Image (tube, rainbow, N blue to C red):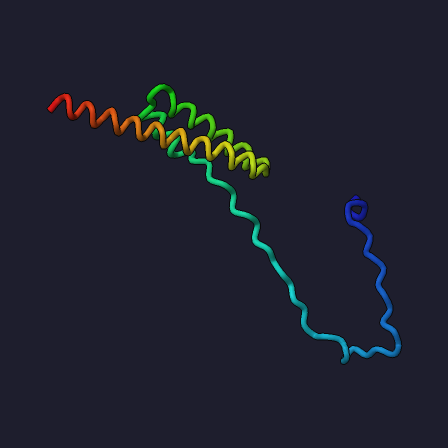
Amino acid sequence: RAREMHEPLPPYEVLPADVSMEELPRSTTVLVEEPPRPPRDHLVWSLFTTLYGNFCCLGLLAFVFSVKSRDRKVLGDYSGALSYGSTAKYLNITALVINIVIVVIVVTVVS
């Protein structure tokens, strides 16, 4: 069964008689490309926004988009993960700005 899983080796080419091993290059260049960095999903930020600043459910929406981004990233769909992660980031920023404005208004009114 193990032999069925291995592909057969490709046939080798015989070195022509007029070429010697000393004439062939002795170095080989191997280019290794790094895989692209996976996009950020902002899951922790969305979780904190959901727990501490969930104005008009923006934190919950950000959390949902973060989970979708993480799912896409696990499946290898980096463009979908980037899209969902970007949406989660902008929802988190919007919720943060609104919460800061609310805190400033409350502090101003109280004092």
